[in-house]
Every structure is written in C-alpha cells, then in structure tokens.
Amino acid sequence: GQQLNQSPQSMFIQEGEDVSMNCTSSSIFNTWLWYKQEPGEGPVLLIALYKAGELTSNGRLTAQFGITRKDSFLNISASIPSDVGIYFCAGRGRNAGNNRKLIWGLGTSLAVNP
Amino acid sequence: NAGVTQTPKFQVLKTGQSMTLQCAQDMNHNSMYWYRQDPGMGLRLIYYSASEGTTDKGEVPNGYNVSRLNKREFSLRLESAAPSQTSVYFCASISQGGEQYFGPGTRLTVT
Image 1: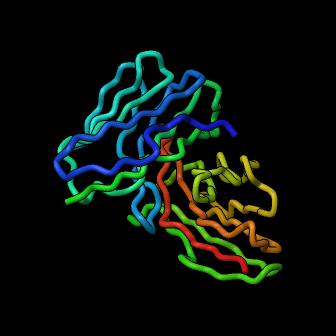
Image 2: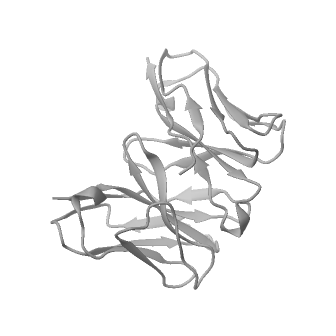
C-alpha cells in the first residue's frame, strides 16, 4: 500500500537539543496527524493539522502543514528523556471518503541521551 | 472514560488455533479500525468499520474476520492462526474529524 516518506528513520540526540523530522507524500493531503508511540503502548495523537500552512503547537512540540500540501514537519524543542519513542506521521488525501483511512509513515525512532 | 480498550494484552497460540481479539470504545465514534504493526512495516490496516453494521477489508485482510457487534465493540478473529500472524494488533476509534485514537495493543505470538 501507499506509504509516506518519513525521515530521518532514527535520531540519537543529547538532552536539551532540538529535533526536527518530516514526512512527504507524492499526493496532496488535506489532513496531517502526528503520533508518538512508547514501548509497549499504542500510538498517541500529538498534533492534528487541517489547513495548508497551519502551524500548531502542543507544549514543546510544533508541527506544520506544508504549503504544498504534500509534506509536514514536527519539531521538538529542548528535548528531555521522556521524549524517547517512535514518532509517526499520518495523512489523509482528498479521496479518502467517509472511511477516513490514513496513510502512515514508517516512523522516526528518537533516543535522548541524558 | 477509558477511551479504547483491548483484550487480551498478550496471547500465545499454536498454529491452527483460533482466537478473537476484543476492542471497545466509549467515545461514541462511528468508525473503528484494526491494524497490525510489524517491525519495519509500520501500521497496516486489516479491516475497518465505517459505521455500526458495516465492515470492509483493508490492506491485509487475509486470514482475518471481523464483527462490529454494536457501536462500541469491534472484534477481530483469527480462524486458523499462522506464524505469519505473529504481530502486535491495534484497534483504533476514529472521531468525526478523522483523528484516530488507539488502544494499548495485543501482542500475539503464533508458534
């Protein structure tokens, strides 16, 4: 099935550093969602974006809906050890219909060195 | 308000055995999904239910069946488990806005 290109695949950073990750699609999306998954848990929704150019924050997390509608970015500022996990992007195109199916990235694995 | 609950949390089956994974949501959502998650493969949609009384195949439906018992509950059944079905299974409930809320997962091993 169709997948998003999510990068980087993994990151290992020092506590206090800022983090950036992104997702790109070959087709136009009208929704972008960012999730975090911790070991042994299900993905948890962090930020939802619905309009091109939209910039939304959730604490130290900021996500943007790319102006081309084919990409999205997630930034984490001043990382802390509890930011460790896998971050997934997901998007939905204009033709998703009432079933609301999402296209998923393969995730960015984040490790934070205290 | 528990959100999305799944049972069991862990399960080990022998090849050929059957089992049903249970999922329930208390958010009054119409849509519910079943995914499997495998290393390097991301989340793959098995089956979904856009509303009570309807179910449809997703990306990887072979070897599975589903039942949307009522608005709250959506179960996934493996009739004859195979080692290829070793995976982590997630149920998700979908809001009107399309946001997906996940359960804690069922970790299934088929030997």
